[in-house]
Amino acid sequence: QVQLVESGGGLVQAGGSLRLSCAASGRTFSSYAMGWFRQAPGKEREFVAAISQSSYTSYAYSVKDRFTISRDNAKNTLYLQMNSLKPEDTAVYYCAAPRGTIPVLRTTPSGYDYWGQGTQVTVSS
Image (cartoon, rainbow, N blue to C red):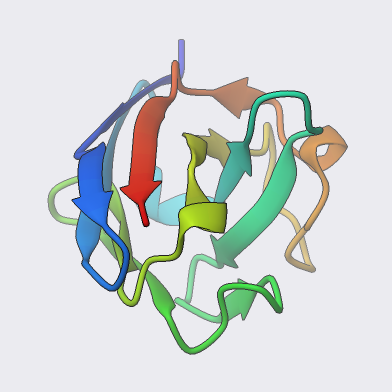
């Protein structure tokens, strides 16, 4: 049973930074791509970033050059370093994983099968 547990969310002022973590268990973490998504109130869940088994990365245009996705396979942990935060980054952030290995990083929620419970990020202006 794959389990994903996010942490690191909180309240930060605009321009500040946060680092989210996602602890994974239940299978060989290094063998699978991982992704981060977010959902603001009244909006659909949207793609933030993804990372392949070999650490190739993909970012949403809105976060590129501000956010960095990374993974530590020895710790079975996924990270999202968020810098220069803006009020529009306020959302619940989720980590996600596909059921199988995938040849191309997926950028839609339907491409992922396992989800964490989410962690709230609030950016004040």
